[in-house]
Length: 123
Image (cartoon, rainbow, N blue to C red; front, side):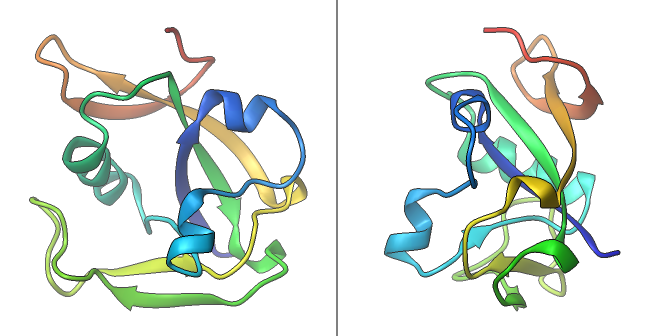
């Protein structure tokens, strides 16, 4: 089992069906992270002011019905992530059966994401 982390909107998760994102059409894949530290760096770099609550899906990449390529960040990884880190790119939707758990990103008083925990996000 190869677990990867995918950050998405709570509404996208609760809507049911396979998980997709705009990047599947614009870039040809869904973004994911290899571990919690990398996911937190991504969240802090790109999701500092989300329009709605977010969740992190723990995905068994072996159960994704599409190719998963481990690639370098382009043009560069987010702050705090080494240039040697490879990101899993899922070249198709995430089937719900591939999601092993759902985590809530936690923010500190300054708004930085600091941890991923079990439990439903709050608005």
